[in-house]
Image (cartoon, rainbow, N blue to C red; front, side, top):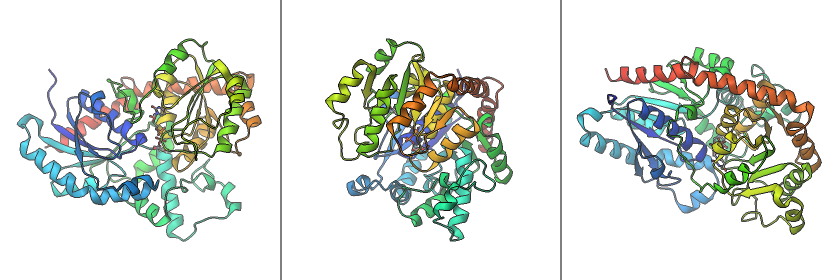
Length: 451
Ligand code: UDX
């Protein structure tokens, strides 16, 4: 039997795009000999039953219904950092009092946005490690943004928005992860806190050298503690259980089973993005007019002013008939892995992007806010495995891009590059690859913190 290396406490940020990679990391570390306890807020708590190898504990988050429904995510994160400090401390003190000798608490791993966990770890003289669920390019661009903010250079002019950001090629000013997240003082505070290492002993990063060699090298040069780039972390999650907060509709897999190889475009805009009815309609007709098969995730509430898809007319439904399958939430990794899927229209959330890259599926990039714009630029101009749809959504253009990427000769190079990139990233996660080695070094590092 494998020796128990002790217990790790994981503190995820309660959003889908943060919960999934943290639970994947937890499952990976559990399979390598650690006991793992996930301390979660009541708000957006993951489904425990899907993760029998992890222990879950809840702490009160003190969030009111009004705060939760406000949609100001930065404010929520700031409130959690204040409200959860004492409850986490009490929770860890209780754990330490009751711990078995072979399951001694060896450290705390916290999402970069849950920095209150570092304060608690410090008070209890426990080592702490930061987990960054986003990419290195975004981290660097946030640093640049901070400099602009502090220097009083925000907002920048419309004419500047198309210019390249110095030292961040190929990012343009308009790609900076800036908009839609509450008021700017909050952003400044959250950005400053999340980039600060404080007394943490290391950084774990859900990215890989094969995708981000240059931004990672620059960050490593400046970072005072070791960085373990272990991405894509879902490749090390041996259980591969679902971490979805919403119910996955698996009927879409049965529908995919009936379709020809690489014949389906999969569309999902992640867990937070929302659009107006007019964009939704352009999207719907672009898909219909492309005459390709499509599997479309329309998250309830993601079309502003609608519950779900009631704005789609009978004309539309007749036009697409059996060519389209629409669901509220899909088992995305399974969908992308399915041989019927040939293209992913995505908002470029970092998890979705990694999942697509790992399956060699080319992308249409429609970023909405924050880091998604940085990632879209990398997908289209650095890795060149997708097309960035930068203009206002218009059905004719949507139809053209879908056709180009799915069927035309013009899209062949992009499709081939997507397969090459998949192979490159897969090699990182295989024995001897850079991420594989990083995971091993991370385990040794955590063990060394106990001495
Ligand atoms: C948010 C931000 O939007 C994103 O930019 C940041 O990188 C993380 O936080 P989100 O919108 O949740 O991300 O997107 P993403 O990071 O792609 O994560 C979504 C997760 O939900 C993915 O792991 C995806 O597989 C999963 N998903 C999505 C499903 O399982 N089913 C679906 O139908 C849609």
